[in-house]
Length: 398
Picture 1 (cartoon, rainbow, N blue to C red):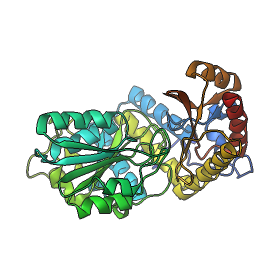
Picture 2: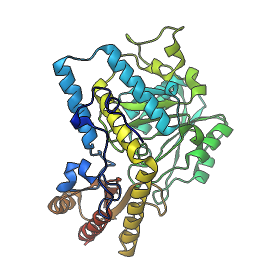
Picture 3: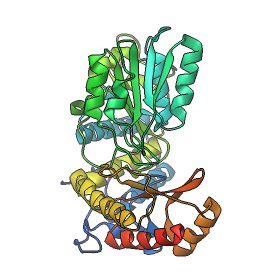
Picture 4: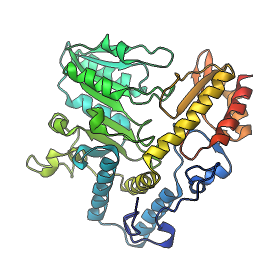
């Protein structure tokens, strides 16, 4: 991909902000990107599922944002134009129109907007699995209490929630299916096309929390059939915390309406009323949008297909290594995601000491009577990282 000097961060380019020039690929650095992540000189970082490292291009974008604010400031018009540019980039990367994209503050906000917009009635039901993020049950419990909607929960089996289990609970009174595209614990990845077909055949909609998915590989949102999805940008998209990208299928724009209004709220005749931008009622987190611009262009330059291929090679190698060592896996086999989790009997505090001494970053989650260890592989990781973590896993399991 060609990235112009002027376009890279939406400001006049300097030598520090030149287009991405990747290092030559080597066995230790197959995508030529490790130099862009200074933390890798000191750590084996396997924790993008918690919070992603940001590449140097995003660091440069953040500096340019603050430097420009100090030197001259930005006009509102400039910042809104940047937001629209990022909207177009995101849509082009992930198979959506720019009219289908809105910038929110969090993934949870997106699901609340969907639930508050749809006309739920007593006797309707919503279906989700027990692999959703903890905010999802809270949202639907209130819906049950205030509107008499039935909650139906698919119970996962060995870290997976297959389509056939959803089919047992979905019927003509189902209004919404909600899932995490990739589960944050086991790494289980849903077949979204199949779930969308199930929802639509029963007159229901499909919502996805996509925070553990977007940025891990190529996807065409329209082809997947997802009706609504939201993703924070601080994990696999490798940007900041202040912005989450909300996607609405164009045909459903009239179904989703803002819960709040403000100075940016459109009137009924505005063109903005006919796009997802109608949800952006107030000042956006513009600094994070400038960072997201740099992050998306960085990922685009590498190639989402290469990003997925690299992480999958590593995840499969790690899964097989754990299985060969008879370590209790929490992640189903052949799950196409960058997350691999396993169980140990050591308490979290003891496990954290071992990990700290080894200078490895992973996540621990209490899962009585075990501790679950979550390992996540980004495109900057390599086979040496896998082998190192397998050695650490043996210590954790001892």
